[in-house]
Each structure stands twice: as C-alpha cells, then as structure tokens.
Length: 130
Image (tube, rainbow, N blue to C red; front, side, top):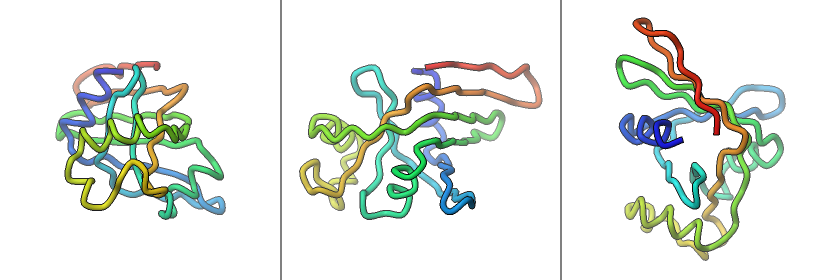
C-alpha cells in the first residue's frame, strides 16, 4: 500500500472513475492519505462524485508518472469519523479553506479490497493487493 501511496503522491494528480446511470465518470483528484493502515481519498458530500460512490462504491484510480502508470480497483468505504477527516486536512492544509472536519460536507473514504497494477512498456506488470 505504501508503494501505491508514494506513486500517487509523486504524480500529484490521479483520475478517479465512477459510474452514474450506467455511464462512466472520470475526474482529476489530488488527495491521498494513509490513516490507520488504510489508503484514503477525500471529496465533498455535496459533489456528484460522492453520490456516485454512495450508489456504487466500486471505483478505479489511474495515474501516470511519464514512464509507468498505476491502476487501482477498489471499493470506496466512507469513514465519517472526525479523526479520519482531520488527518486528511492536516495532510492537505490548503483544503482548510474549503473544508472542516465537522462541516457536514467533508468526506473521506478508504480503499477496501484494492488491487493495484503498476504497468509500463519496459517492465512486466506488478500487482499489489491491500
């Protein structure tokens, strides 16, 4: 899991895919955190992506660093604890202009049953489960 976190952090931006009404939805994300040995992402409950994950928690992340790419298939599980939200906000202080741990909008989700695949044109794929 640490390797996945490090890769996503180094890319800065990754893409999160969800489904809405049978159609794929993909958007850029930039938050990733490790809290209590779980990999977390963050969004706002008022956003469409939050509603999409509530309706169908199966997601996929994709990132590219210029040489290799990473795809992570997982189930997004909401963690509504203030401690988890605060940890994310401490990792991303710039979010504090838009979110607070107790604002009723901040949402953090951890990735459950994740399969991460590192791929490139120069090496055999590597799979990490967490």
